[in-house]
Image (cartoon, rainbow, N blue to C red; front, side):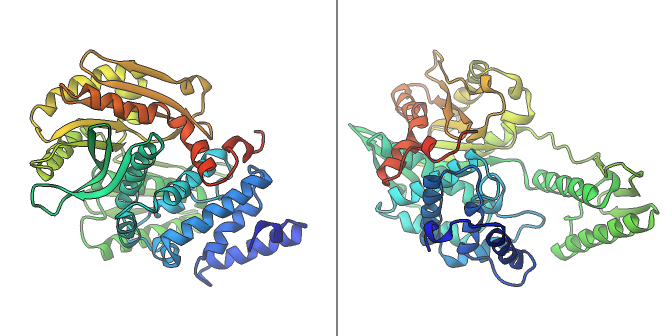
Length: 436
Protein backbone atom coordinates (compact mmCIF):
# COMPACT_ATOMS: atom_id res chain seq x y z
CA UNK A 1 0.00 0.00 0.00
CA UNK A 2 1.46 3.37 -1.03
CA UNK A 3 2.09 6.38 1.13
CA UNK A 4 -0.59 8.36 -0.68
CA UNK A 5 -3.10 6.00 0.93
CA UNK A 6 -1.48 6.47 4.30
CA UNK A 7 -1.54 10.27 4.62
CA UNK A 8 -1.69 11.35 8.19
CA UNK A 9 -5.12 12.80 8.90
CA UNK A 10 -4.90 13.29 12.64
CA UNK A 11 -3.94 11.92 15.99
CA UNK A 12 -6.31 8.94 15.69
CA UNK A 13 -4.39 7.53 12.73
CA UNK A 14 -1.08 7.96 14.52
CA UNK A 15 -2.44 6.31 17.66
CA UNK A 16 -3.87 3.40 15.69
CA UNK A 17 -0.53 2.73 14.04
CA UNK A 18 1.32 2.74 17.33
CA UNK A 19 -1.24 0.51 19.00
CA UNK A 20 -0.70 -1.93 16.15
CA UNK A 21 3.06 -1.78 16.67
CA UNK A 22 2.64 -2.24 20.43
CA UNK A 23 1.10 -5.64 19.72
CA UNK A 24 4.50 -6.73 18.42
CA UNK A 25 6.42 -5.48 21.43
CA UNK A 26 3.95 -7.20 23.76
CA UNK A 27 4.53 -10.47 21.93
CA UNK A 28 0.95 -10.70 20.70
CA UNK A 29 2.08 -11.15 17.09
CA UNK A 30 5.25 -11.33 15.00
CA UNK A 31 6.90 -8.28 13.46
CA UNK A 32 6.01 -7.78 9.80
CA UNK A 33 7.52 -5.56 7.13
CA UNK A 34 4.40 -3.40 7.16
CA UNK A 35 5.22 -2.61 10.80
CA UNK A 36 8.59 -1.21 9.76
CA UNK A 37 6.81 1.33 7.55
CA UNK A 38 4.93 2.73 10.55
CA UNK A 39 7.94 4.70 11.69
CA UNK A 40 8.27 6.29 8.25
CA UNK A 41 4.76 7.74 8.18
CA UNK A 42 5.40 9.75 11.34
CA UNK A 43 8.86 10.96 10.31
CA UNK A 44 9.63 14.65 10.85
CA UNK A 45 12.95 14.23 9.07
CA UNK A 46 11.76 13.04 5.65
CA UNK A 47 10.10 15.15 2.99
CA UNK A 48 7.14 13.73 1.07
CA UNK A 49 9.51 12.42 -1.60
CA UNK A 50 11.77 11.11 1.15
CA UNK A 51 8.94 9.04 2.53
CA UNK A 52 8.33 7.55 -0.90
CA UNK A 53 11.99 6.55 -1.19
CA UNK A 54 11.92 5.15 2.34
CA UNK A 55 8.87 3.06 1.48
CA UNK A 56 10.61 1.88 -1.72
CA UNK A 57 13.63 0.91 0.40
CA UNK A 58 11.47 -1.23 2.70
CA UNK A 59 10.02 -2.99 -0.34
CA UNK A 60 13.55 -3.73 -1.57
CA UNK A 61 14.68 -5.00 1.84
CA UNK A 62 11.66 -7.27 2.06
CA UNK A 63 12.27 -8.63 -1.44
CA UNK A 64 15.86 -9.60 -0.71
CA UNK A 65 15.90 -10.39 3.01
CA UNK A 66 12.54 -12.23 2.77
CA UNK A 67 9.57 -12.30 5.16
CA UNK A 68 11.09 -14.71 7.65
CA UNK A 69 14.17 -12.54 8.22
CA UNK A 70 12.44 -10.19 10.67
CA UNK A 71 11.20 -13.06 12.81
CA UNK A 72 14.52 -14.91 12.80
CA UNK A 73 16.56 -11.76 13.43
CA UNK A 74 14.43 -10.80 16.42
CA UNK A 75 15.25 -14.17 17.99
CA UNK A 76 19.01 -13.73 17.69
CA UNK A 77 20.96 -16.41 19.58
CA UNK A 78 23.21 -13.88 21.34
CA UNK A 79 22.19 -13.01 24.90
CA UNK A 80 21.43 -9.40 25.83
CA UNK A 81 21.88 -8.07 22.33
CA UNK A 82 19.87 -7.49 19.19
CA UNK A 83 20.56 -8.13 15.54
CA UNK A 84 22.29 -5.11 13.91
CA UNK A 85 19.23 -4.59 11.69
CA UNK A 86 17.28 -3.48 14.78
CA UNK A 87 19.89 -1.15 16.23
CA UNK A 88 18.94 2.52 16.45
CA UNK A 89 21.70 3.50 14.03
CA UNK A 90 20.00 1.48 11.29
CA UNK A 91 16.42 0.29 11.99
CA UNK A 92 14.37 2.25 9.41
CA UNK A 93 12.73 5.25 11.03
CA UNK A 94 13.03 4.23 14.69
CA UNK A 95 15.72 6.89 15.05
CA UNK A 96 14.38 9.80 12.99
CA UNK A 97 17.66 11.39 11.86
CA UNK A 98 19.23 11.81 8.39
CA UNK A 99 22.15 9.43 8.95
CA UNK A 100 19.81 6.50 9.67
CA UNK A 101 17.90 7.07 6.44
CA UNK A 102 21.19 7.45 4.57
CA UNK A 103 22.23 4.00 5.84
CA UNK A 104 18.86 2.44 4.96
CA UNK A 105 18.83 3.99 1.49
CA UNK A 106 22.45 2.93 0.94
CA UNK A 107 21.75 -0.69 1.86
CA UNK A 108 18.59 -0.91 -0.26
CA UNK A 109 20.31 0.71 -3.25
CA UNK A 110 23.29 -1.63 -2.99
CA UNK A 111 20.95 -4.62 -3.12
CA UNK A 112 18.98 -3.12 -6.00
CA UNK A 113 21.99 -2.17 -8.15
CA UNK A 114 24.07 -5.31 -7.54
CA UNK A 115 21.30 -7.91 -7.82
CA UNK A 116 22.11 -8.93 -11.40
CA UNK A 117 25.64 -10.04 -10.56
CA UNK A 118 26.44 -13.73 -10.57
CA UNK A 119 26.56 -15.35 -7.11
CA UNK A 120 24.92 -12.27 -5.55
CA UNK A 121 21.95 -14.21 -4.23
CA UNK A 122 24.13 -16.96 -2.83
CA UNK A 123 26.10 -14.36 -0.88
CA UNK A 124 22.91 -12.80 0.44
CA UNK A 125 21.43 -16.18 1.34
CA UNK A 126 24.34 -16.75 3.70
CA UNK A 127 23.40 -13.50 5.46
CA UNK A 128 19.74 -14.39 5.93
CA UNK A 129 20.58 -17.92 7.10
CA UNK A 130 23.37 -16.95 9.48
CA UNK A 131 21.96 -14.37 11.91
CA UNK A 132 25.19 -13.72 13.79
CA UNK A 133 26.19 -10.05 13.86
CA UNK A 134 29.60 -10.81 12.37
CA UNK A 135 27.97 -12.20 9.21
CA UNK A 136 25.86 -9.03 8.81
CA UNK A 137 28.92 -6.77 9.08
CA UNK A 138 30.80 -9.00 6.66
CA UNK A 139 28.03 -8.62 4.08
CA UNK A 140 27.98 -4.84 4.49
CA UNK A 141 31.71 -4.75 3.77
CA UNK A 142 31.25 -6.88 0.64
CA UNK A 143 28.45 -4.63 -0.62
CA UNK A 144 30.50 -1.53 0.20
CA UNK A 145 33.47 -2.54 -1.94
CA UNK A 146 31.31 -3.91 -4.76
CA UNK A 147 29.04 -0.86 -4.95
CA UNK A 148 31.88 1.67 -4.89
CA UNK A 149 33.66 -0.31 -7.60
CA UNK A 150 30.49 -0.48 -9.67
CA UNK A 151 30.12 3.31 -9.64
CA UNK A 152 33.71 3.80 -10.79
CA UNK A 153 33.25 1.46 -13.75
CA UNK A 154 34.99 -1.68 -12.49
CA UNK A 155 33.81 -5.14 -13.46
CA UNK A 156 32.53 -6.58 -10.19
CA UNK A 157 32.32 -10.27 -9.29
CA UNK A 158 31.26 -11.91 -6.04
CA UNK A 159 32.85 -14.90 -4.31
CA UNK A 160 35.18 -16.26 -6.98
CA UNK A 161 36.93 -19.48 -5.84
CA UNK A 162 40.62 -19.27 -5.05
CA UNK A 163 43.00 -21.02 -7.42
CA UNK A 164 44.63 -23.07 -4.63
CA UNK A 165 42.13 -25.91 -4.75
CA UNK A 166 40.55 -25.04 -1.41
CA UNK A 167 36.93 -24.16 -0.74
CA UNK A 168 37.87 -20.55 0.09
CA UNK A 169 36.76 -17.66 -2.10
CA UNK A 170 37.50 -14.00 -2.68
CA UNK A 171 34.59 -11.95 -1.43
CA UNK A 172 34.78 -9.33 -4.21
CA UNK A 173 36.92 -9.17 -7.34
CA UNK A 174 37.36 -5.85 -9.16
CA UNK A 175 38.78 -5.89 -12.70
CA UNK A 176 39.58 -3.02 -15.08
CA UNK A 177 42.25 -2.06 -17.61
CA UNK A 178 44.59 -4.88 -16.70
CA UNK A 179 44.23 -4.41 -12.96
CA UNK A 180 42.65 -7.20 -10.95
CA UNK A 181 41.99 -6.70 -7.24
CA UNK A 182 40.84 -9.65 -5.14
CA UNK A 183 39.33 -8.30 -1.93
CA UNK A 184 38.42 -10.20 1.22
CA UNK A 185 36.18 -8.56 3.81
CA UNK A 186 36.95 -9.14 7.46
CA UNK A 187 35.80 -7.61 10.75
CA UNK A 188 38.33 -6.84 13.45
CA UNK A 189 36.43 -6.96 16.72
CA UNK A 190 37.28 -7.22 20.37
CA UNK A 191 37.26 -10.73 21.75
CA UNK A 192 34.06 -12.54 22.67
CA UNK A 193 35.00 -12.03 26.32
CA UNK A 194 35.38 -8.29 25.70
CA UNK A 195 32.06 -8.05 23.87
CA UNK A 196 30.34 -9.86 26.71
CA UNK A 197 31.85 -7.51 29.27
CA UNK A 198 30.69 -4.45 27.35
CA UNK A 199 27.26 -5.95 26.71
CA UNK A 200 26.68 -6.64 30.40
CA UNK A 201 28.04 -3.27 31.42
CA UNK A 202 25.63 -1.48 29.05
CA UNK A 203 22.75 -3.63 30.23
CA UNK A 204 23.42 -2.96 33.90
CA UNK A 205 23.61 0.78 33.22
CA UNK A 206 20.20 0.65 31.50
CA UNK A 207 18.66 -1.43 34.27
CA UNK A 208 20.04 0.80 37.03
CA UNK A 209 18.37 3.83 35.45
CA UNK A 210 15.12 1.99 34.74
CA UNK A 211 14.74 0.67 38.31
CA UNK A 212 16.31 3.62 40.14
CA UNK A 213 18.95 1.37 41.69
CA UNK A 214 22.66 1.94 42.20
CA UNK A 215 24.81 -1.03 41.17
CA UNK A 216 28.48 -1.31 42.03
CA UNK A 217 31.09 -4.05 41.91
CA UNK A 218 32.43 -6.63 39.49
CA UNK A 219 30.49 -8.65 36.93
CA UNK A 220 32.81 -11.65 37.01
CA UNK A 221 32.13 -14.13 34.22
CA UNK A 222 28.55 -15.44 34.43
CA UNK A 223 28.98 -16.86 30.92
CA UNK A 224 31.79 -19.17 31.99
CA UNK A 225 29.39 -22.07 32.35
CA UNK A 226 26.45 -23.04 30.18
CA UNK A 227 24.00 -20.67 28.53
CA UNK A 228 21.38 -21.87 31.01
CA UNK A 229 23.57 -20.72 33.90
CA UNK A 230 24.09 -17.40 32.20
CA UNK A 231 20.34 -16.89 31.83
CA UNK A 232 19.86 -17.85 35.48
CA UNK A 233 22.35 -15.16 36.51
CA UNK A 234 20.44 -12.59 34.42
CA UNK A 235 17.17 -13.64 36.06
CA UNK A 236 18.77 -13.29 39.50
CA UNK A 237 19.82 -9.74 38.62
CA UNK A 238 16.28 -8.93 37.46
CA UNK A 239 14.76 -10.26 40.70
CA UNK A 240 17.27 -8.32 42.76
CA UNK A 241 16.58 -5.09 40.89
CA UNK A 242 12.86 -5.46 41.54
CA UNK A 243 13.37 -6.39 45.19
CA UNK A 244 15.73 -3.47 45.93
CA UNK A 245 13.60 -1.00 43.98
CA UNK A 246 10.41 -1.89 45.85
CA UNK A 247 11.76 -2.64 49.34
CA UNK A 248 14.52 -0.08 49.70
CA UNK A 249 16.81 -2.77 51.10
CA UNK A 250 20.26 -3.51 49.69
CA UNK A 251 21.28 -6.85 48.22
CA UNK A 252 24.27 -8.63 46.72
CA UNK A 253 24.44 -10.86 43.65
CA UNK A 254 27.46 -13.14 43.54
CA UNK A 255 28.72 -14.46 40.23
CA UNK A 256 31.45 -16.81 39.05
CA UNK A 257 34.97 -15.57 38.48
CA UNK A 258 34.85 -13.18 41.43
CA UNK A 259 31.61 -11.46 40.47
CA UNK A 260 30.16 -9.41 43.31
CA UNK A 261 27.49 -6.78 42.57
CA UNK A 262 25.94 -4.62 45.30
CA UNK A 263 22.44 -3.22 44.69
CA UNK A 264 21.09 -0.20 46.60
CA UNK A 265 18.05 1.94 45.87
CA UNK A 266 19.03 5.41 44.69
CA UNK A 267 18.35 8.30 47.05
CA UNK A 268 15.07 10.19 46.58
CA UNK A 269 15.29 12.40 43.50
CA UNK A 270 18.49 10.74 42.32
CA UNK A 271 18.99 8.62 39.19
CA UNK A 272 20.16 5.05 39.38
CA UNK A 273 23.65 4.38 38.13
CA UNK A 274 26.02 1.47 37.61
CA UNK A 275 29.73 1.50 38.46
CA UNK A 276 31.23 -1.70 37.10
CA UNK A 277 34.93 -2.14 37.82
CA UNK A 278 35.78 -5.00 35.46
CA UNK A 279 33.91 -3.89 32.34
CA UNK A 280 36.77 -1.92 30.75
CA UNK A 281 38.53 -4.10 28.22
CA UNK A 282 42.04 -3.01 27.29
CA UNK A 283 42.98 -5.50 24.61
CA UNK A 284 45.97 -5.47 22.34
CA UNK A 285 44.17 -4.47 19.15
CA UNK A 286 47.34 -4.68 17.09
CA UNK A 287 47.66 -8.30 18.18
CA UNK A 288 44.12 -8.96 16.94
CA UNK A 289 45.03 -7.40 13.57
CA UNK A 290 48.11 -9.62 13.32
CA UNK A 291 46.03 -12.71 14.08
CA UNK A 292 43.59 -11.70 11.33
CA UNK A 293 46.43 -11.17 8.84
CA UNK A 294 47.89 -14.57 9.68
CA UNK A 295 44.54 -16.35 9.31
CA UNK A 296 43.70 -14.68 6.00
CA UNK A 297 47.19 -15.28 4.65
CA UNK A 298 46.80 -19.00 5.29
CA UNK A 299 43.38 -19.10 3.64
CA UNK A 300 44.64 -17.24 0.56
CA UNK A 301 47.73 -19.42 0.05
CA UNK A 302 48.68 -19.26 -3.62
CA UNK A 303 46.56 -16.14 -4.24
CA UNK A 304 47.12 -12.42 -3.76
CA UNK A 305 44.33 -10.64 -1.86
CA UNK A 306 43.60 -7.26 -0.35
CA UNK A 307 41.92 -7.17 3.04
CA UNK A 308 39.06 -4.73 3.59
CA UNK A 309 39.10 -4.62 7.37
CA UNK A 310 36.14 -3.19 9.26
CA UNK A 311 37.71 -2.00 12.51
CA UNK A 312 35.19 -2.55 15.33
CA UNK A 313 37.67 -3.26 18.13
CA UNK A 314 37.94 0.38 19.22
CA UNK A 315 41.21 1.44 17.61
CA UNK A 316 39.63 4.71 16.46
CA UNK A 317 37.65 5.22 19.67
CA UNK A 318 39.42 3.93 22.78
CA UNK A 319 43.16 4.00 22.08
CA UNK A 320 45.72 6.74 21.56
CA UNK A 321 44.66 6.81 17.89
CA UNK A 322 41.45 8.58 18.89
CA UNK A 323 43.53 11.68 19.67
CA UNK A 324 45.63 11.57 16.50
CA UNK A 325 45.14 13.56 13.33
CA UNK A 326 44.45 11.63 10.14
CA UNK A 327 48.05 12.16 9.02
CA UNK A 328 49.37 10.84 12.33
CA UNK A 329 47.16 7.75 12.06
CA UNK A 330 48.55 7.09 8.58
CA UNK A 331 52.15 7.42 9.77
CA UNK A 332 51.75 5.19 12.82
CA UNK A 333 49.58 2.49 11.26
CA UNK A 334 51.69 2.18 8.11
CA UNK A 335 54.84 1.76 10.26
CA UNK A 336 53.13 -1.15 12.02
CA UNK A 337 51.30 -2.87 9.19
CA UNK A 338 53.53 -2.53 6.12
CA UNK A 339 56.58 -4.28 7.65
CA UNK A 340 54.27 -6.98 9.01
CA UNK A 341 53.04 -7.72 5.48
CA UNK A 342 56.49 -9.10 4.66
CA UNK A 343 55.56 -12.08 6.84
CA UNK A 344 52.28 -12.59 4.99
CA UNK A 345 53.16 -13.07 1.29
CA UNK A 346 49.57 -13.65 0.14
CA UNK A 347 48.25 -10.32 1.50
CA UNK A 348 48.66 -7.50 -1.02
CA UNK A 349 47.62 -4.79 1.39
CA UNK A 350 45.12 -3.63 3.98
CA UNK A 351 42.25 -1.19 3.75
CA UNK A 352 41.35 -0.25 7.34
CA UNK A 353 38.32 1.81 8.40
CA UNK A 354 35.98 2.07 11.41
CA UNK A 355 33.09 2.49 8.98
CA UNK A 356 30.75 5.43 8.47
CA UNK A 357 30.50 7.48 11.65
CA UNK A 358 28.21 10.36 12.70
CA UNK A 359 29.74 13.81 12.94
CA UNK A 360 29.04 15.89 16.04
CA UNK A 361 31.58 18.65 15.38
CA UNK A 362 31.74 20.21 11.91
CA UNK A 363 35.52 20.57 11.96
CA UNK A 364 35.86 16.77 12.11
CA UNK A 365 33.97 16.50 8.82
CA UNK A 366 36.55 18.41 6.76
CA UNK A 367 37.70 16.11 3.90
CA UNK A 368 41.37 15.25 3.78
CA UNK A 369 43.90 13.13 1.90
CA UNK A 370 47.46 12.27 2.86
CA UNK A 371 50.04 10.04 1.19
CA UNK A 372 53.25 8.61 2.62
CA UNK A 373 56.54 7.75 0.93
CA UNK A 374 55.82 4.02 1.33
CA UNK A 375 52.68 4.23 -0.84
CA UNK A 376 50.14 4.30 2.01
CA UNK A 377 47.16 6.65 1.72
CA UNK A 378 44.77 8.14 4.29
CA UNK A 379 41.38 9.58 3.37
CA UNK A 380 38.62 11.41 5.19
CA UNK A 381 35.39 11.79 3.24
CA UNK A 382 32.31 13.78 4.25
CA UNK A 383 29.15 11.75 3.63
CA UNK A 384 25.40 12.49 3.46
CA UNK A 385 23.47 12.55 6.71
CA UNK A 386 26.14 14.46 8.68
CA UNK A 387 28.55 11.54 8.56
CA UNK A 388 32.16 10.87 7.63
CA UNK A 389 34.55 8.01 6.99
CA UNK A 390 38.26 7.76 7.58
CA UNK A 391 40.12 5.13 5.57
CA UNK A 392 43.74 4.02 5.78
CA UNK A 393 45.12 2.09 2.77
CA UNK A 394 48.44 0.32 3.35
CA UNK A 395 49.91 -1.67 0.44
CA UNK A 396 52.66 -4.22 0.33
CA UNK A 397 55.77 -2.51 -0.98
CA UNK A 398 55.51 -2.23 -4.76
CA UNK A 399 51.69 -2.24 -4.83
CA UNK A 400 51.29 1.55 -4.95
CA UNK A 401 49.20 1.44 -8.16
CA UNK A 402 46.64 -0.87 -6.58
CA UNK A 403 46.53 1.29 -3.46
CA UNK A 404 45.78 4.40 -5.52
CA UNK A 405 43.04 2.56 -7.43
CA UNK A 406 41.34 1.57 -4.16
CA UNK A 407 41.80 5.09 -2.80
CA UNK A 408 39.73 6.53 -5.66
CA UNK A 409 36.75 4.42 -4.58
CA UNK A 410 36.74 5.96 -1.12
CA UNK A 411 37.93 9.44 -2.05
CA UNK A 412 34.73 10.00 -4.04
CA UNK A 413 32.39 8.01 -1.80
CA UNK A 414 30.54 11.25 -0.99
CA UNK A 415 28.97 11.16 -4.47
CA UNK A 416 27.88 7.52 -4.35
CA UNK A 417 24.47 7.94 -2.65
CA UNK A 418 23.18 10.59 -5.06
CA UNK A 419 24.54 8.57 -8.00
CA UNK A 420 22.79 5.42 -6.78
CA UNK A 421 19.53 7.28 -6.11
CA UNK A 422 19.64 8.60 -9.67
CA UNK A 423 20.27 5.09 -11.05
CA UNK A 424 17.10 3.95 -9.28
CA UNK A 425 15.06 6.93 -10.52
CA UNK A 426 14.98 8.88 -7.23
CA UNK A 427 15.84 12.50 -6.37
CA UNK A 428 19.17 13.37 -4.68
CA UNK A 429 19.47 12.87 -0.93
CA UNK A 430 19.17 16.52 0.10
CA UNK A 431 15.69 16.69 -1.48
CA UNK A 432 14.60 13.72 0.62
CA UNK A 433 15.45 15.41 3.93
CA UNK A 434 13.80 18.38 5.60
CA UNK A 435 15.92 21.34 6.65
CA UNK A 436 17.51 20.58 10.01
